[in-house]
Length: 339
Ligand SMILES: CC(=O)SCCNC(=O)CCNC(=O)[C@H](O)C(C)(C)COP(=O)(O)OP(=O)(O)OC[C@H]1O[C@@H](n2cnc3c(N)ncnc32)[C@H](O)[C@@H]1OP(=O)(O)O
Ligand SMILES: O=CC(=O)O
Ligand SMILES: [Mg+2]
Image 1 (tube, rainbow, N blue to C red):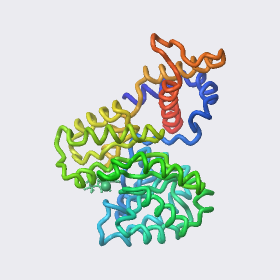
Image 2 (cartoon, protein in one colour; image 1 turned 30 degrees about the vertical axis):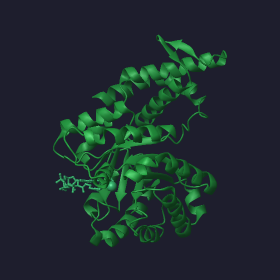
Image 3 (cartoon, rainbow, N blue to C red; image 1 turned 180 degrees about the vertical axis):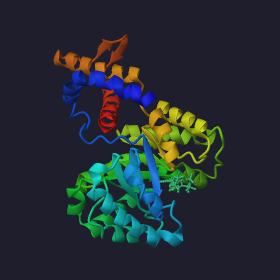
Image 4 (cartoon, rainbow, N blue to C red; image 1 turned 90 degrees about the vertical axis):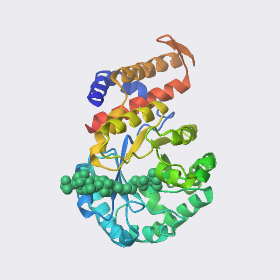
């Protein structure tokens, strides 16, 4: 299996690299790196599915209050999610995922106020709050405001709760740089909700621009590539489109591998049967892990000699390549610890 090879490859190299990698803690926040290869939705209205969360091995589990929940079940879903988050976070060390998040309804839906009112009654917070359909920086300001009013800034700050947002419209896509910059600024000014990842809401995006989903996915090429570039410009994780054809495992693998090649860090999944295929596709190969680990080591040695650029396996290496290598090493280190 691809992931096992990569993790084993990493383990052989890890003793050498870990001390070296830690020297670059200022370059990337190594401690808080959260792998999000597969981000699985669990509708909050479905208690049977919620009960499965402790054993789910998706990197990121999303307790869903938005489009996976019928309008008539929003109240039930909120109540079930409040109970689940308390139960799950009380025993958080037993969870198999790296991150437990809650996706609330969007600002434009008018439902977020009720969501946050109910969620703030839980004793625990999730690892991340997740906000769909962010179309403007003004909406983001409203998101910070509603959480501050119901939880109090201190409560959100003390738990170091992260923020993940969805871009799902033409307007959001065109305004992405402004939206991402203002999310990071709002965090700087308020001290809470560090934006860590951005998700491409491809189904809503298609609806918004009037595109029809096709088997070859050409209608999304421009948007997916712009999306990755915008995320990476702000050093944020980029999570790729959902693949709704539950029986087409070959197609899922193909699109997952393509997403990985294009720079995405992970993919949304809707069914447990999709998790492993997606996780394997977003795992670096053993060769890539070896390359990254040795590069980080070589960078450290050259930097101590005052050299910023140097040759490594016939390639010119400088800081951007170091960052790419650190991404790989951090991902595999976290996954290796978990497995
Ligand atoms: C575009 C977007 O916004 S995507 C986000 C919104 N959408 C969602 O949240 C949908 C999430 N997914 C689902 O709700 C479900 O997977 C569905 C409705 C699509 C299919 O569910 P089912 O018809 O039950 O699928 P299936 O019969 O294959 O399920 C097999 C088992 O997996 C479980 N399962 C299926 N999906 C999930 C899930 N997302 N999380 C946890 N368990 C699940 C089922 O409960 C069932 O368990 P069982 O064997 O103990 O009975
Ligand atoms: O929220 C996800 C989407 O594809 O829309
Ligand atoms: Mg959506």
